[in-house]
Length: 371
Ligand code: 5AD
Ligand code: SF4
Ligand code: FES
Image (cartoon, rainbow, N blue to C red; front, side, top):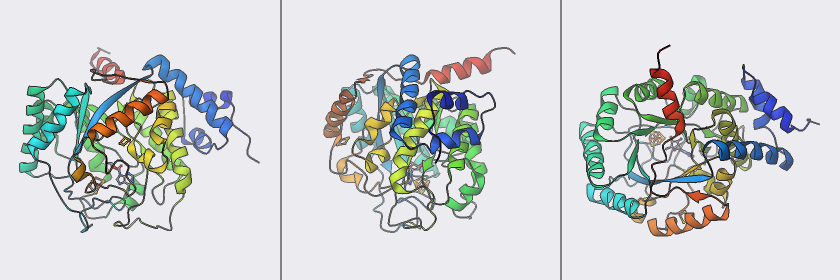
């Protein structure tokens, strides 16, 4: 029988100056309630000390599901002909921004599928400028891979954060998750993250847990990747099957669905312990697997939640995965529901604050100081 990990084992492994995948894998594989409790209390101690028990809200507007890509795992992939494609109007997005302002959310996240057309890019810049001219909201974009010039235009329009998950840090696994058509290249994605940092964005990235072919070693690699890339914000979540994709009912699972939430929570805790003052999202996909998935995320070290502000009639058309929560609710209901959920775990909502990750300021001060 495998020996249980003690607090001493976990801290010893994670504080090794030459931390390797092999040190992280046994933690990711931990299973007993006692081991999870130990990990949780280590992560919460650091959360309390470094970022406090405050949850920042980022109102999420899923403004377009048009996507040029064909990721094997995602319900919005171009070849899924069952999707009713849409883009919200400027008015609809501004309406969501007004709601966020009224409710004193610090920030908005504008997310879309990947579309590199000039028209789409102009649209995004215009919308960001308008929101910034009306409201004091921090703006995060999550609009996929774009050229460095485009990222600069986004930044100059007033967005100051960007989310682009690496999805997996293993180039080999990336190849298995995406078609080989030149549009899905690991190198390109990596270069996008570098460009985003160069332009000056606070950069968010992350990966999925439990996608076919993925191993615990791969996930340990993702943790080291996020550390080495000096990412300021993390968004990680369990993979959830979508019937309109090639990865529905795959034979190649290595991490079964029942395990994925636990591994996600473990990864959140390890990231908090290792990276300390980053922002970590408790993602909606966690709630798709467990009614209390997002609360559990907060209790393992996450400090950001993204209440959905997408107009209710469009929510069913933005299904990256099936079984997505809140399809019939509206922004008011989700707001009240989340307030109650957060209070239930003893945390406070950081109303009226942007909630920038301290890690970002440490990173830029460090890189601009003379060596
Ligand atoms: N299950 C969970 N997450 C998914 N994403 C895409 N498809 C799925 C899925 N089936 C995630 C990707 C992407 C983010 C916007 O949604 O990680 O970066
Ligand atoms: Fe498009 Fe993103 Fe889905 Fe890939 S994960 S198909 S890029 S929306
Ligand atoms: Fe949407 Fe609970 S968060 S209904």
